[in-house]
Amino acid sequence: MAACYGPTAGHRPWPQALQVSHGLGTATPRNHSWRLQERQHLASVTALCFAAFRTLRKRRPTGRAAAAGVLWLGQEDLEDLKSTSQMSELPVLPVEDVYLPGAPVTLQVTDPLVCELYDNLLLSGGRYVATVLCSEDRREMAAFGTLLYLEDFRQTAGLHVAEHLACGRVRLKGPMQTTEDGFVLPQRMEVELREDLDDSEAQTPATRLEPQLSQLERLRKKRGITSGLKETLHLEPPLPRELQAVQGLWQVKSGLRVRIDRDQVVGLGKLELSDGRLVVKLEKPFTASIEGSESMAESLTWDDGDVWQRLAAPAPQHASAYQNALWRAARNWRSTGTLRAELRRGEARWKSAASMIQAGAERPWDPDSSSRDEWESAANAADSAARAEIWEEVLRPCQQLLQAEVMAERLEIFRTMLQAEITRLQLLQTLDPKD
Image (cartoon, rainbow, N blue to C red; front, top):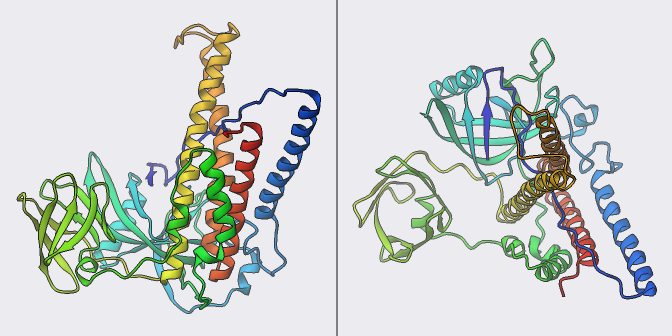
């Protein structure tokens, strides 16, 4: 989750991530009747697929486009929103991604203007910044963004690295500053902190989304896919006091950064408590003693001699257990969609190269040959298709979740996202049965 701000007022090309291949296969029909049935089935499943995506796109008649798409700053229907009266002036960074609450966010900063924003923030003792999705032409910012809690800001390898944890949502109040050419600038801006409103319903998100989750699980099992999406929607039990005290970002003796997220040392193993000491469950368990207050550990001394020093206090919580469960599931879904798009992009590039070679239109690549343009054209086409796919399947749905105001509305958006995934897998199963 890294974004890099270049020397031209934060402008950079849209990231090359993600062209996408559905991995569609073909089945050989045994007879004409079977072929006709297959075509009829394919037509019906394809219709369902388009219907699911149209549901994501259409505008609901609510006075504001709550789940219809991205709300851009300056839209009139934003005035219908009830103010929370929690106003603040924060650095606002236009980015080409959507960060969901609970996600760690690393931003690589090279733009002097963004560095100045961070320097002024640290000098004033502040810890919060906001990131906001900008349009592809970088001339608009979304009306809703992500509140980030700054945990560490350091210089390494000639650039600054800012480590954050996404901890809430903001609504931009404007006005928006732009360059002479109309490009959005990183800037300090007045924002309104949006609290996640509870619907105080007894059912957990996993229960309310049970039909879609069960159907999706069955389809994924047929395709050999395991993601644990259903499990992420269950409410997590409260952490022991000792584990609550060590949450956050740490620096080990060697200078590396390590994050403790609930009962996990991210990238290392599961964290447990035994006789008042922390235990990381690896092939050889390591234990540590905790130093600091009951509510906030300041250092961890491990039995192998390593010492971890706290870099920042944990980010304040702005969501209930119900809301955290849904945000956790959405992050899981987002990671799957992004990875799938990246695989598709690579496959599309490979197919383009293979087709040129098979057609005899290309010899081994030569930088001085005129065929270089053909390779670049094929690669750009793959990247362009990927940008459209990542917008449709990842960025826009995530932005819809971010701008939804109540839990019931967010659940309905996520239900539609699950239904679109179900329809996609049904189409795949029709074209390329796995059983």
